[in-house]
Amino acid sequence: MPELPEVEALREFLDAHLVGKEIARVLPVAISVLKTYDPPLSALDGARVTGVARHGKFLDIATEGTAGELHLVTHLARAGWLQWKDVLPSGFPKPGKGPLALRTALTEGDGFDLTEAGTTKRLAVHLVHDPAEVPGVARLGPDPLAPDFDLAAFRALLAGERRQIKGALRDQSLIAGIGNAYSDEILHAARMSPFKPTQNLTPEETAALYTAMRTTLAEAVERSHGLAAGRLKAEKKSGLRVHGRTGEACPVCGDTVREVSFADSSLQYCPTCQTGGKPLADRRTSKFLK
Image (cartoon, rainbow, N blue to C red):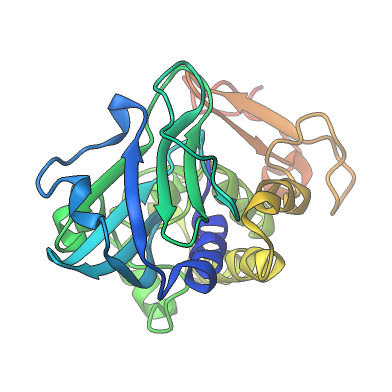
């Protein structure tokens, strides 16, 4: 799933390639992708792109046209991606079983496709007058890389929490933009168990977690800076230390990276770095193996 660093890199890429250009048409290909119907996508015909913003994991393309200010807001979900094309294929794409979900064509002949792999379709596109009209955007917590999101703000967020820290980091209404992969990376950098209860964090541990969060995300954004959209997935994978690396050696201590599986996802961690050398039990018990 694209998370804050990748979506920020896409925002930067689109800001350089889209702003100032005129939209010829936006064509939905998969029925499931469009979550709003008023205004219709045809309201973007002839509109000019005025800016590109990011809200957590949401991309926000702002436009100005005959219908006034409109925002094309996209959430790429788990298997979605944006593919930029200097020259889009001619003609209208046909709905089918392929990955293409939506095409945005510019009057200059370039544009981008939104695609989604797999059979579970969760990629979402909203056309709204204000991004806050999108429920997922409206409920977002603060951005972890915002200049005013300091340690005091982080402490205040966690003060009333009583759950495992992995779940807290992934809660978009608490902190925006962190998903499964970067929560694993943050916890590894903080040398902290993903199952540690938030209410048990000491002031020192909270400070270490905050530093790990800001540093991990900032470094990932920096690695992605200036990359073309098509290279971002590979960059994300190459920069991960534990997530998706079950069975490999931890780059910090050399211990074997282990995994805990869930119904539809998994987490990875290093026992030596994060759990005192003890492997974690199945998530259903949330206890250490004896």
